[in-house]
Amino acid sequence: MIENPQVTEIKIYTEKLVLGGDWQGEVIAPITSSGGLDDAKATHYLVRNVWLELIGYQVEYYIFRIQAAFMVPLPKVVYLYQQNSRIIVNKNVVKCNG
Image (tube, rainbow, N blue to C red):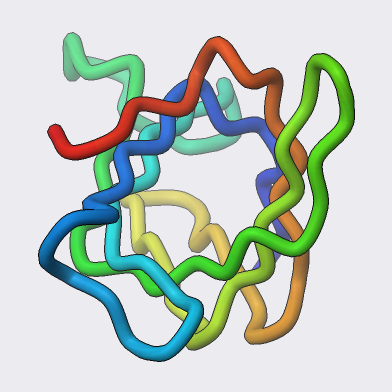
């Protein structure tokens, strides 16, 4: 298992799916060449129902903490997002409320 730190889009649902200070959302990230989808046309994967906590904000970036670990199994690799690990993304890739 390896970690894939690249995330191209985060969708968070701040209006209805809240647990304490956490938001439910979706993570979209690229499939790297080691992902092993040789014949497939997919270039990204989508993970739904991810719980994220906003723990930091800078001028151009948001920092989210993953509240529950999840895996993305692909044919040749498994991407692991560990509990309490962080996703740091440019603010332009964060979409609120779908």
